[in-house]
Image 1: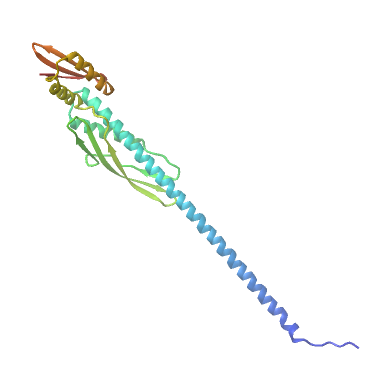
Image 2: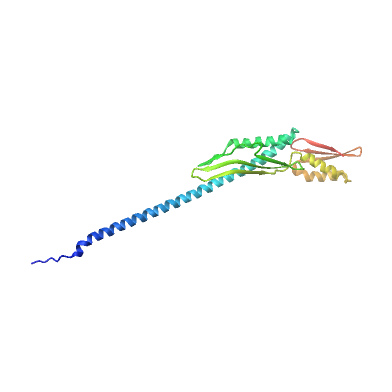
Length: 229
């Protein structure tokens, strides 16, 4: 004869286990979703930082290149206008023309849009010095924007290349003041040419009827300034 004893605990055990299992599954799902979201946020942050670094690097590269182009433009303009006996205004116009020629070529960067406006009379400021040199400051309202969002704005310009335009006149004036105190013209002429050879200038002194004439020649440009004392 068999006997079965009814146990209330057996009847409630299955539902309790099921609830516990569902709770574990829900907690696991929440944890997985949280870690996935955290990983996505981390990846998005890293991508944003990388995009910002790339944008800054592109902006810096464009700024450096434009400043180098400005130096080249100033030097080329001084030579061209100086050979043609032009004016300071002609130099400034040529500088803008040469710089805009570089800007017109544009820039191509992966995932970055670049827009650099042309320079005009209001973009560059020319400060002419007594020795014939010029310092140039400027600003271009450029913008560089990455497809991920980071952007950079504006390009500052500054250049003060080695003087050429009006340099001959300045040197001739200086030598003319010094020559009055010189007794050996040949030695003084050799000393001057040694000093100014690095600039591509040649200086010649002539004594005619007790009057010293100073000639300063631009070796590259072929122009000269003659000053009689």
